[in-house]
Image (cartoon, rainbow, N blue to C red; front, side, top):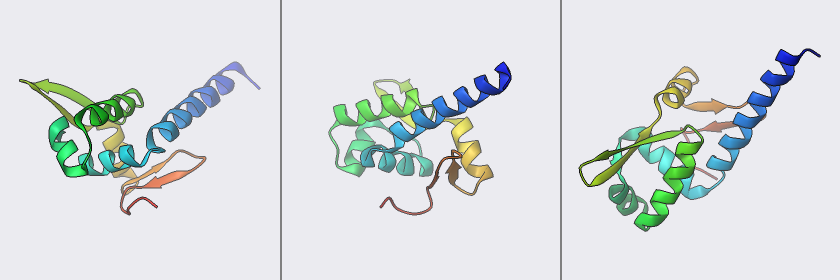
Length: 111
């Protein structure tokens, strides 16, 4: 097996692990589904999902590290939105994320 193929498999495996860890938590799943509809501030997300603001911030940091969301400071607020690359990937697959090992359907509620 050549080095390029091994490196590609490693990158895919790392991405898969990162995405699985990020989406494994039901609160993060709810955050992603909510942000797919619109960009919201941390306090707005907390209100909609009945979560404390520090908890929302913690979950957003994990989702940001996985490349799923981006955040930006607007005045005193921090707003979260879906990362463009992640949104584009979902758009290509009709709101499904296919990691190869498994897939996530954002059209249906979590189970």
